[in-house]
Image (tube, rainbow, N blue to C red; front, side, top):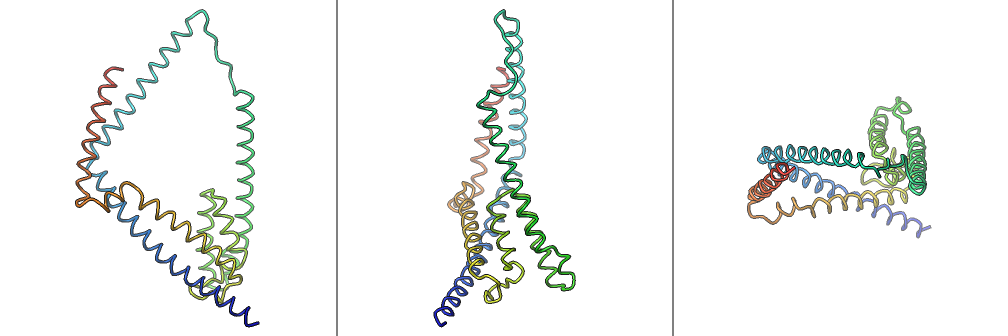
Amino acid sequence: MQAVEEFKDDLHERIKALEAEIVELECDLSATETKLNSFENQIRSQLHAEITQVNILTLLYKKLQRAKKDKRLEQKKKGKNYKEPMPGLKPQEQAHKATDLLAQLSQGQELKRLYREAMLKIHPDKFAHDKEQMERATDLTTQLIEIYKSGDLDDLVAFHEHIVSGNAMSHVPYQPELVSNPASLLQFLQKKKAELDYALEILKTSYTYQVLDTYENPLSFIDELRVQFQQRILQLQKRTRKA
């Protein structure tokens, strides 16, 4: 009996530690995103003219290339040996396409099944008699809808388990003894922490973050980009003139 209690206590402490780490990671992620967004907005603002010109010239170049391709095709059609390509996919391509379609349909059906099962457990109408529980259910429903719309099956599986286990409605931060299934909650939190770690790593290994982290004056990076844009504009201007 004592061993069981010690196991529960250890599990509860691990959950509390994970919750604290997750809060810290969420704060770090939010601060990093804000920092990067602010810097990227400065870049876009100061290079608006160059970015616009590159986009216009790129569209023009693509249009000219399409016109060239169409012209060559018309010339080929006038040749004696020209044969119209057979419509449709090759048998192997059709098989691959059919397999991909079946996989998509299967995943879509599983997403719907998990979503409906989870929604039945936490629909706010079920908790209309309890304002606090209804608010919690509303928040969970919002999260569930967002995950479902993202189409990420792994995320939906984890959130579905979190809801079906009863943890989603009973979980209070730093009070793991209140949840229905502490082991399941621990697994859910471990996955959440791993996702936050990965998201933060992606941001902090981005080139923009490296500029902010290593440049003495990060705004000097905008001048570097301006030179690159001007070179690209000259290159596109030459290409469109030749075309």
